[in-house]
Amino acid sequence: MISRREFLLAGCAAGMSPKLAFGQGSTGPQTQTLKPGAISMDHPDLAQPWQNMLGFNGSVPGPEIRLRQGEELRVRLQNGMEDGAAVHWHGVRVPNHMDGVPVLTQNPVPPGAHFDYKFRPPDAGTYWYHSHYVSHEQVGRGLFGALIVEETQPPDVDRDITVFLADFRTGATGAFDPDFVVPSDFSTEGRIGERVLAFCSQRHVNVGERVRLRFINAAIDRVFDFKLSGGIGAVVAIDGMPLPSPEALAPMVLAPAQRVDVILDVTEGIRLDVLMAGVWKTVGRLSASGESRREARAEIAALQPNDLPMPGRILKHVDILLRGGEGDLDHGGFGSWSINGVSGLPRAPVAGFRRESTGVLTLSNPTAFPHAIHLHGHHFREVLADQAYGPLRDTLLVGPHETRPIVCVFDNPGRWLLHCHMLSHSADGMVTWIEVS
Ligand code: C2O
Ligand code: CU
Image 1 (cartoon, rainbow, N blue to C red):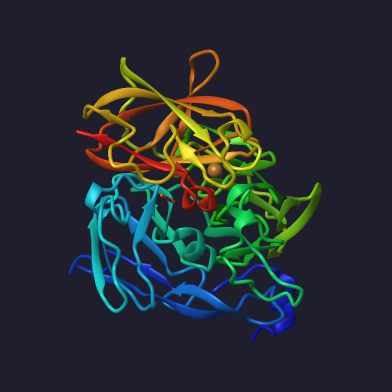
Image 2: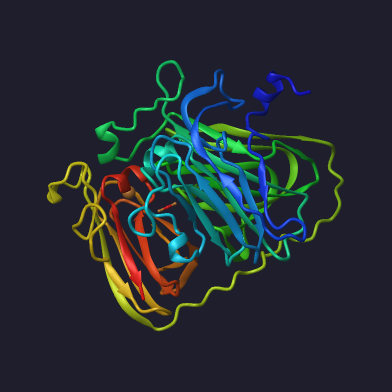
C-alpha cells in the first residue's frame, strides 16, 4: 500500500486512467464507450480534489486508448454532460466524417445522445483525443485522453509511459477556477494557468531500463519549455511521426497539442522541469529503484516509419494571414482573431486542393503573440530556409512576427479545419477550413 505522502512525493499522477485495449481475442475489436461528464478531479499533487472539472469516464485524462496499427478503433461517445459533445482524434489521418468537428463534419451530440466513431488509424504513433465542442472550456476542464497506435514492430523498451502536461488557473484557494469567459484571455496569449500538472500513466521506473516517454501538451494555450533528466536518450518522434534518425535530447518546446516521443536509458529518477516565468520548476517525477546493470545497450534506433507520400511538384501556394488580438492595432481588432480577414468559420473554404496534390500554405503571423497552427486530417512539413523540408508535424508554432511556409500532400478528401490550437484564440475566431476534393 502506498501512502498518500509517497504519492505526493512522487509528484506525478498515475493509475488514474484505466486503459481501453482494442483487438483482444479472436472476436475482433469491441466498441468502447467514452462518456464525458462532470467530475471532481484528484491528483497526487493536489491538497484537495478539484471541483468543476470534466472527465471522460470519470477521470482526467480519460482512458488511454491503445491499438495496434491496422486495427480498427470503435468508440461510442455517450454524452453524459448537460452540454454538447464531440470528440476529435488529434493528428490521426481519419476519414473526414470521423473528424469530430461540429458544423464542419458532424452535429454536436446533444446531452444524453451518442455518436459512434469507427475508423482504422493508418499511422502508428502518439496521438490524443479531445473535445472539439466549446473546446477551450471543455478541454480546459479536462476532456482529453491519449490515443496510442502501436507499431507493428515496436521498439524494444521496458516501459511505455504517457505524460500529459497541462496548466490550470487557480484562485487564491488553490482550487480550480472554472471561469472561462474572462475577456482578456481571448485577446492576448490565452488563458494561462499558474498551476502546471503532469499526468503520467506510470510513475516508477528501474535504473538500467530503457523507457519510452510520450509527452503530450494538453494545455489550452500554454507553450511549454521543458527538459527531462534522469537518463540518456533521444527524441524519436514528433507529433506522432517518427524522425528519420533520433535526435539528441535537449530542452524542448511543446506548443499546445504537440507531442514528442523520447526513448530514455534510465540512470536515476526521472525529473520533468518546465520553465515558468524564467525559472525551471519541477512538475513531474518518476521515482527509480535498483542499480545500473551497466549492460551494453543497442543504440536508440529510428522507429518504423509511417507510410506518407513525399511532397511532389507544388501546384498551389496559399497565403494564410493570422491577425487580431491586442497588439494588432492596425487591424483595429481587440480580441477578435481572424484568418485571411475572416473571424470564425467562413462559409467557403479558405483554399481548395485537388486530391493528391501538393500545396504550400504560407503562415504569416504579424501579431504580437505566438500561434500553434493545426491542420486536421493531414501531416505537413515546414519548408525551411534552404528549401529543405522539416519533419512531419500536425501542429506548428509560429512565433510573433514570423512567417513559416508549410508543404502538404493533400491526400485525404473532405473539409478540414485549419486553426490555432491556442484554444482561446480559435474560440475567438482564429479558425478556418480547407477543402480537398
Ligand atoms: Cu486538437 Cu482542431 O484540434
Ligand atoms: Cu493563436
